[in-house]
Image (cartoon, rainbow, N blue to C red; front, side):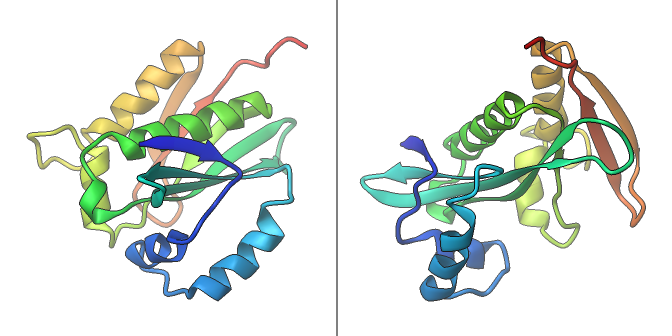
Length: 171
């Protein structure tokens, strides 16, 4: 499996459907024609035997409430028959590296509360405790590698909000 940035082939619409967003290949192509030319968006795919088996989308924005930029992972999906192989972790790491290189001080990752199957990705294998798993372990690892601080608090609409603040890079 390989990860390629800024290139998407057929199959991305099926991955959006697996996330619960009904879309057709034509609708996906129309959205991608608007997104891919933009330098503030990333769409990266994982390929296996020239088939799209994973996709991650991210963008970089500017804070309104303070100086600086933030990044948001807006979609992460791996084909059901390719899960458990580290594809999602590699896609997420690719997006994090891209966000960091673009000056994002924080990376925001959302996961809907109704997507309990996806939450397995964020849990430590062998536990069923919500919030005690792989997602926070990944956050801790990334934060420690980049001298970042992690803040956990309650999200406005419920659930957990995790903020990762990276130090400003020297020019």
